[in-house]
Image (cartoon, rainbow, N blue to C red; front, side):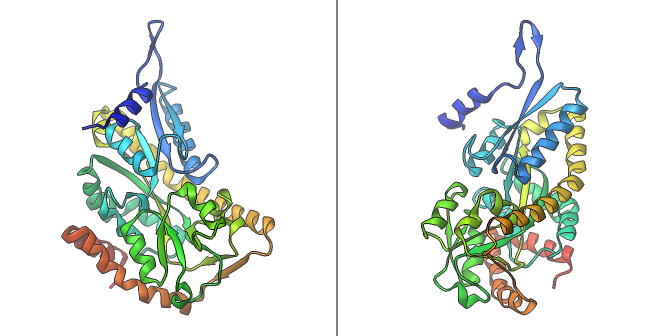
Length: 338
């Protein structure tokens, strides 16, 4: 049953088919993202809007709601399930309390380290689209696609080269049981905080670091309140595009085909955007703060964190149960990992 808050929000946003002066206006699809205008998610949503409006000759318009417009990432997911918004783009880490099985993709040192290889995998994985999509459906969600926003980068107030350096280190993470366990296994003290509070927490030393791709670090100005950018290679920042199953299944076969084909076309588009954004915004960071220390861990240093991360897989299967074991086995087989 919808809460009063959700019901009122739905009334405020319900403009799917509006009649004005006896003429039907365009159908509006709402697309909510958890990042700011000008971000990678915004670029994705803007391209989706452009393609849908062009292909439907304006019969469908897409309105984009950026960070904070309609609530927290968790609320955006609930809005999608309830049909308040038609699409939402949220990070996998923010799905942990709703679709625990999705945290499979938060396991450190599991996906390919190469951005292109990860992108190809995310667009075609049978584990994702033949299996894990069913777990989304049980929550009333249609998992359309996943993509990477780039390699994760630690911003820290001290040098971290091995797990011992993480001692008494408060690392901000998304509200994900697996991320909490992952950084605990790597030696840190994980601290969940809403995205909008991260800058202030870094500035006030309430946390010692956070993790995001270079593009996000530049957009949110996290580099201003940190001393080190560290590439440890533990994961990519993964993102999902989802709808409510009820809304999606209510669409005609032609509209469903339109959505599938448009999102498939965006796979190649967003990979190029991600590469460009992260490279260009890293250069902006260097120009804005030349004294910032940029550190890429060696293979041996990464191995130390990777060894500590093996225990996190067991934590995932405890959280996701027998279903988690099935998905983890499928993922490792698909990736050729023993």
